[in-house]
Image 1: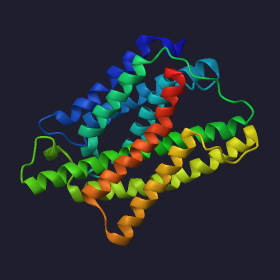
Image 2: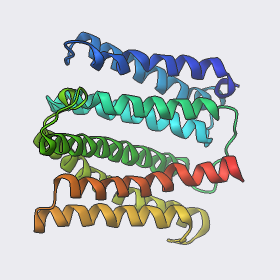
Image 3: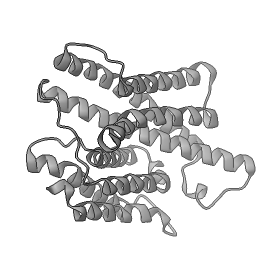
Image 4: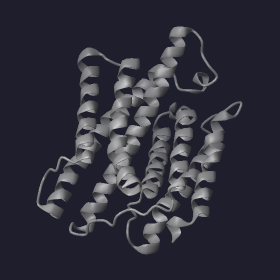
Length: 268
């Protein structure tokens, strides 16, 4: 099977290297090398994520496929972000090693099969819900990376000791602005995902809500993100305090999206 060939996963993993190494150059920039590395990484991860579905005609629900699909969507949205935000390319030193780590996990569990999709719901609703979930997780990934960049910059400024890493990251204000915009987008898309999830559940089981681990963690993430946005608007909470809460929201959504799948597909 396409998805179980270890060589395919290793090639996709190797394709992440140029985009990971590009920011480490002496004079990095949003130039041809940056865009070329990003395009190569996107094409490779997209191929390994969608290849099994194209070969079999059915979407793979395995833990490995979820990781590759998340990586590909993160790269796609990151590329779009870099087109509209001049400082976004400076997030690469934090984002790319994280995506490499996801790719390594996906390669490690390449042979693990996931359960088949429930066919009681129309395929359109199922694929729409999957697409929204991927976009949500990718947006929050970028928001968390931007928040982490802002946190590192703020800490370096307070200590008056910039590091080799912080010199390559966007300024604290730029990172905070990107994190906020991405967080707003995440909240909107996550709300749509919860709505389509309820619709899908109704089509499959004639129920609007089941408080399983995935649903509960997703709602907690939605409430946490909403709380962060309200705290910023009403009390001006931002910087390190906002970054900590944002990383908590990211942890909740990671547990909902990938953690539950790891437990059900790998451990059980």
